[in-house]
Length: 295
Image (cartoon, rainbow, N blue to C red; front, side, top):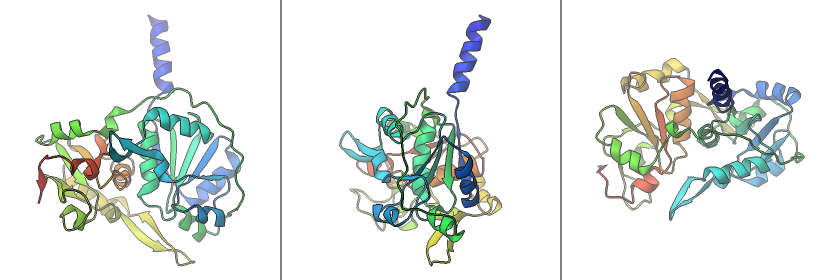
């Protein structure tokens, strides 16, 4: 019995949940000099930006490569088995430190980080302020492509606790201990803009545009980037909703992307609660149903 228990503990430890961490440009520059099992993913929208210059060792991949239709409904996070295969082609195994960045430090790397968190990847980093912050520090860039060898990912564990599907949303609509939080702009939340079949928001949802947790900076080359505001400046809003006081949070936006930033803020930056789920179907899926909405 003791041997079986030890095996179980070793297995559980091997596939235990990880954590998403912010990394500064200076910290990443130091990591580049020391770490061998490190993969950096450049998630900027245009490959032309990558060709012009990128962080040494970075591989370019469009964030849409991590999304796929689900039974005709667009823009869901890709099935786990496909995700794992892509990670292996990128030279990522379970012990790889993965660093994600885009141009401005927006929601995109946080969304991909959430996907890695979903498979309980141990070491996930998001470059604070993205490439434009890196440039502001005059750190090295290159035009060279890295040499990448595919790897076998190894054991992974799906963390179902951080993802909500439509069925879960339906069951939670009337629950008093669940907060629905819409990370879109006020115009989209209020139904004054958008391209969906129905406009508006999930009935009872509160609105917090993801950018409200960040402050905008401009680097010496005139390029914008975003840094998180001090914790004390943003924690009061979330605490006022009962988050961290027993309430569960279901996050959504237009297509799951913006919610990635809010997911990081609530769970890891503020550390308010582990009861945070991202509904990656978001308004993209919900708007196609007859479920209650406002206005």
